[in-house]
Length: 338
Ligand SMILES: NC(=O)c1ccc[n+]([C@@H]2O[C@H](COP(=O)([O-])OP(=O)(O)OC[C@H]3O[C@@H](n4cnc5c(N)ncnc54)[C@H](O)[C@@H]3O)[C@@H](O)[C@H]2O)c1
Image 1: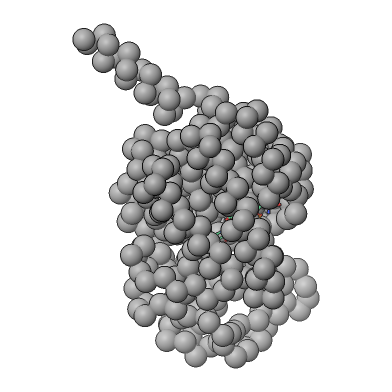
Image 2: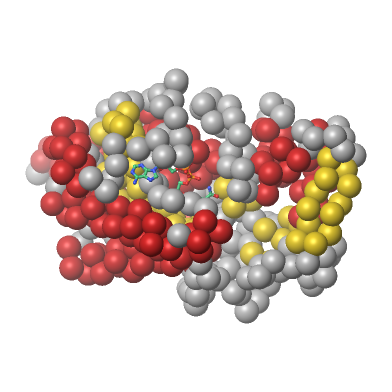
């Protein structure tokens, strides 16, 4: 009996933690995808990146096979599932720009909703044991309070981008009820910073910090600030910035959690600490070693004063907490300092 139990234990550990198992990373050549593949490889998995290069390049440094193709092409995607027999999926491929989504809602629904449908249908067909879905804090929309946001907060997405993520969050919930596919829905806050071990040295131009890094490459440096009359310490908006390497680690920890626990989870991925736009500008100015001029503009529609994550859920359930996400680490990483 004891020997039998021991053998079962060994078998289970091999199934959960095993080295060299294939994990599908959709959008694996993108900003978060590259770091996620790197961390997967570090943990002994073989990441298989599926990417259509619509917002990335084929990496020069990779941590596993890269398959160039579109998740909207289900026949092709099925052939990838057959080829690799995945133990799990980290689904990152999506269109990601909020303003573009308001101009092209059909495109965002097609790419983010129909693309995810293909991934989920194949996850069911191939009896995948765990799926991590990259959602966003944008699903929360307008917040009633300035306190850190809990996952139980009422969801009121304000853009087609955020709505396209929420549609898939809900479908994943129904799929758990009907088919018992364990999934982790991760609501990332503002992913920033550079993972110097990957090809992506810029981050996304749409995010505040890389935008400021670019602005400080000009002379004179000018910082645009939308709204200076919010109820915050210096009147500018407060946001929660989390380093891309911490997000990649959260993806892998969440996958291991659902593979082991076989149950779904929804959790924020942020730091629990926020910075004002002016504090960010000051920090970038310090690393760029340059003074700057503020260009104060009216508030943008839909911007709320404070959006900071409550990160208790990820901490308690899969022992994740940010390790590289101090403001110095994030901003310094654009200047090769940390
Ligand atoms: N960066 C952030 O701050 C942030 C915040 C919240 C959520 N997210 C989510 O995280 C995920 C990854 O974001 P990212 O910042 O790495 O973006 P990214 O654009 O760098 O990565 C997405 C990757 O998916 C690929 N892709 C897009 N459509 C595809 C398709 N139909 N088929 C195959 N590949 C496709 C792109 O070429 C790109 O390489 C996205 O789902 C995004 O919505 C990101």
